[in-house]
Length: 146
Image (cartoon, rainbow, N blue to C red):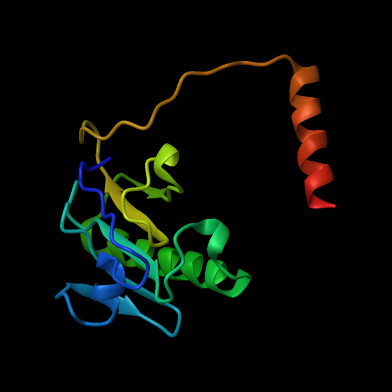
């Protein structure tokens, strides 16, 4: 993840300012709830960020409507990135909280065109819990969903 971290308060964050037109951006798409613009920290040509317009720090702060709009916009942008740059793959990335590697605390998704040996690594250590442990985790989530 990039080293930049925006610690601005809500409403003054870099994305709020960009959405308000106070900061220039290379916009590629906009609708009622979302805006998509080029990431100034391009990791590959065509790297786009899709953000919700209302300040919502994380996925947990979105309305259902905003969450759906963000995914629709991300898919629409991803299709356009595929057409424009013909990447061999594509990664959608969305992080929440400092521990989740979020660096700008305004909900956004990265649409990243991918190529072999592009230097991007997404990996984590496998823990391989026993099936019974997985069943216990599933039960806890089902209870929270109820």
